Image 1 (cartoon, rainbow, N blue to C red):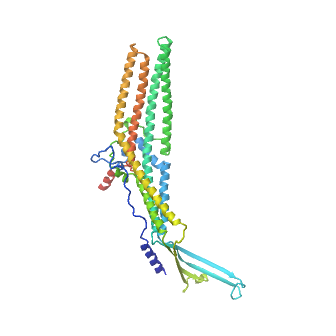
Image 2 (tube, helix red, strand yellow):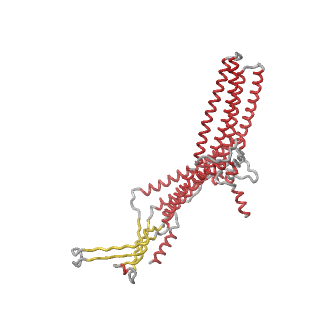
Image 3 (cartoon, one colour):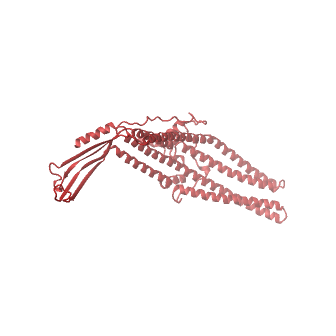
Length: 478
């Protein structure tokens, strides 16, 4: 009996190799063949996905923040647990591919009264059994179980890719939050310096007014300029504190014992990242790979829905020993077995199987649209970052020239005022314009650094800690 059962299971495994799922063909990428702003690739230049985040972000403080966040961030922790959940779901589903054998031991003892006994005397019956049982193993002739297993595997892989995408996003978000906090800190320092200088100017204007050397208009204009600097100082203090709180949440723990912070002008972030071709995004972006795995799962579910229209054959069997007494369970002649194949042919399901097939096909179409949209969004993110990359460099240079011009204007205005050629209004206006130019230059530098981070993330960078090409070469030489 055991040999027959083994042969039956092996035959079922061979016959269940077929699948009724549609043949999968990757949808064409609904984007242009190249970016509107080309990006040349220099010799030996690493792609974003090959560049480790420690190389991309040389700031030691930022490296510490990213390293801590990858351990403590709660969103990333949930994403990792989602992988464990999907793996368990896949293991549950894959268990249906093999027979489930159970060890059984049963005992039954009962008394039949004389009124119900055929011998008109009371009878005590005993029944004991020990053995192995095969519980309803489906012979997967039409690939229903196989398709469900393939779908579960694809969902597991999709979840794994989604966790990688969350990892990349976290690295980028921590870097952007850190740079935003640094920008507010620099702007706050400028506001504090401006407030101090305007406070001195206001004291001087008040003294001049008290001795009749200037008008009340000059005094009030100096006071208004002083208070506007105070407002800017308070606003930037609030914004910096909020940016620090946002960074703390991303990192996942209080920010203590960190290396000293670097100013924006010292952030030597890699900016010359080659974009490659849009088709490269299919392999570089985990979110696109995740969307494709979801599409594969939807495609496999169609095979399961199709197989539901065909007969389902399952086997139930058991082998062991049986006796009416415990002492006789293992005596000669106590061997017992059972074999109960079952065939279920759907005849009338009220349209359930047809509806399930329609549902699986619609879900596949949704998965196709989602996959195509993920490609389009990735293409747009890269294209936007490439367009901004060159223009932001020019914007920073132009804004620096504006700041230099405003600083020279203030110097000349002070000289003219001291020589009595112009009024204090020219000095006040020059001070206001210089402060605005200084703030705008800090903001332009932040935009340039943020743009580099966006391009790095959109090209799939941030997953590796060190350069993958360099790490591979080092391993090969050992």
